[in-house]
Amino acid sequence: MSVLTRRAQVAVEAVLDIAYHAGGQPVQSREITQRQGIGPRALEPVLQKLVKGGVLLAERGKRGGYRLARERRRISVGEVARLMAARAGKQGASASPLGRDVVRPVLSGIEAELFERLDRLSFEELCQRAREAGVLSLAAERLDYAI
Image 1 (spheres, rainbow, N blue to C red):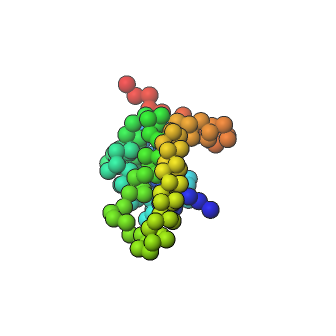
Image 2: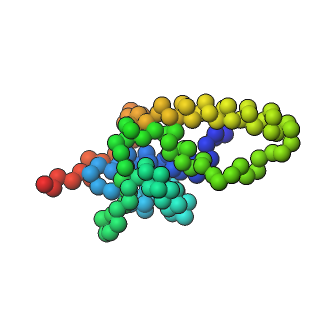
Image 3: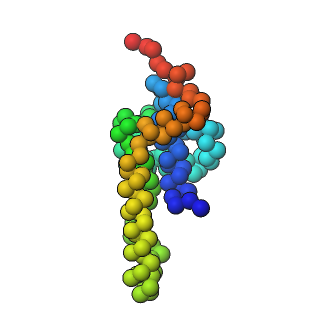
């Protein structure tokens, strides 16, 4: 069971993919869909929300794509997950006394603890874990040596 929504997981995986594979070049969304097995229809709205949220920058053109808006050590997993969790209103919230006075406060407390922990986890740390796990990075191939 996952505690993050599928959309939040897609966002975290996409940002990690960009952080890990970008090198000096933007990463195209089709590259992310191929590596992560995420469908383009699920990925594009997530990437656009991450751009609007200030996590990613979008570059247009033939060699365009996405890159991190800040250093990966300055972007937390919590920031990305919180962007995907942001909703207008409290849809589906229970109006019953048990739901309102018992269940919702418990779940809100657990959610707050989760986000506190995710806020302490940067994409730099996730990249380090990927290196330790032996995941091949394409960043070295994508370095731009132009002066």
